[in-house]
Length: 251
Ligand code: 6GU
Image (cartoon, rainbow, N blue to C red; front, side):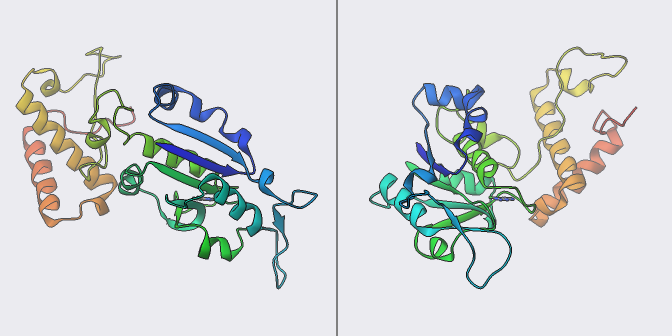
């Protein structure tokens, strides 16, 4: 997959995309990232990319010409999603990431200043995304979040091929507690069931703890009444057997 990112601040992308799993994905040729300076596509003598809003008001807007010229140069056929990162976009999610990973190419436009000229929205971009209900100084960090979450769905990027389909949200549930050695850390133990070697019991415990954690922290994720009932049932069941389902407290 190839992702082109258009930004006024290419330097912001130098660190985060060149470590760990994204670094390996690029080395393996599974992911190619192109970072473009929008200013390079400005035609006027001062290479200006912003201007004052018609009708007055606070701040500056991104001009249409450099953005249209950049996208038409980078993606002449206009045959891939062109996505504007903006707080007004639809909310990015696990599902959107999976959907975007189905494309060969993506173009991400990082919004800045007070926004972009409306004609960019109407006639250049095919989608607008926000990563949550807060305002960032620009779309760059959001673009990096999108790249990371999408890359996890490219086959071969994660060590275990199925990784992205098995983790939190894939089944619509939060992941429950997990433990590694030592079995006793400063007096705090590990639930017997996860050390039991009984795979069926462990699977049941994981499902129950995932349901319980989801019910406590993100009840709105338990969409179906079937899941809600399963969650209530497993909480009750494990309360009765009291075998380590409880969340650790602060002590
Ligand atoms: Cl995509 N851009 C900006 N500037 N702020 C945001 C955002 C995007 N998503 C959440 N906040």
